[in-house]
Image 1: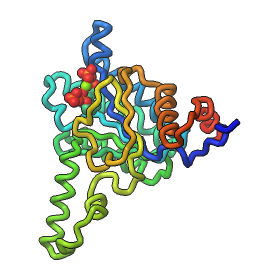
Image 2: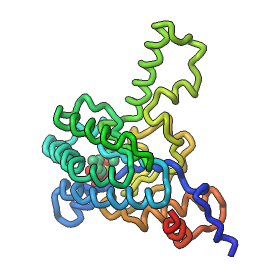
Image 3: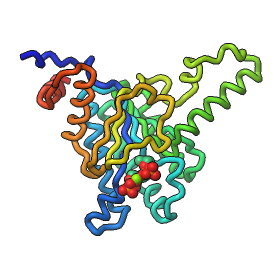
Amino acid sequence: MPNSQLSSEQLPKHIAIIMDGNGRWAKAQGKPRVFGHKNGVTAVRKTISTAARLGVKAVTLFAFSSENWRRPEEEVGVLMELFLTVLSTEVKKLHKNNLRLRVIGDKARFSERLQAKIAQAEALTANNDGMVINIAANYGGKWDIMEATKAIASKVRMGEISLNDIDEDLITQHLTMADLPEVDLLIRTSGECRISNFMLWQLAYAEMYFTPIYWPEFNEDSLIEAVSWFVDRERRFGCTGEQLKALMECN
Ligand code: IPE
Ligand code: IPE
Ligand code: MG
């Protein structure tokens, strides 16, 4: 049995997901787009619990891009309400499971109520040492690089560092998620094959997995399929979903 030796070393350490297709999924059933967003929450739950059981170190979920403010006001409103509700209902569970929750993105544009909820959730889970869950909200890859640039420029101006200190490592350190393993697997659902201004710098070497299924349909088996694909790309020979499930049993 040449494939029975699958070890957790071969799994991705940091998985980033562009959760796309909520609107089309809802429309296909004659429902309003927001029905898709509400059902997307189930897929988030399944993804988090499966990734944690696989022993992944970090999962970054793209929930709302800097460009998504351009959507109809009503849809944006429902999405904001959904964040609030989900933060209220899910955080205790995450904490109980030793998971760390962080929200990355420009939080200043959110309502004070939402900002307070985010701060509360982050503080509650800050000392957990299990998997990190990053929710990318009002996040943009260009924004991330711009913020890092401002921080570095300000240090140069203050004389804390010199121009020659600026190298790739220094830029990486000033980006969000600098303390986490590099993203090694990017998943995008719904058949679109673009980055949509998600992490730009951090995806430099990520394997990219595009699946046609819509986000609300994404489940444990979908994640296992994506991770098997990743392992097979690295190892160049087939690993099976069964092996991954066996690894999950060990964790
Ligand atoms: C992704 O689904 C969720 C968010 C961007 C908030 P969409 O809302 O983009 O769904 P489609 O792509 O229109 O089907
Ligand atoms: C990207 O999806 C953002 C999120 C999943 C949150 P979009 O559906 O907004 O991206 P585009 O507009 O199709 O590129
Ligand atoms: Mg979309």
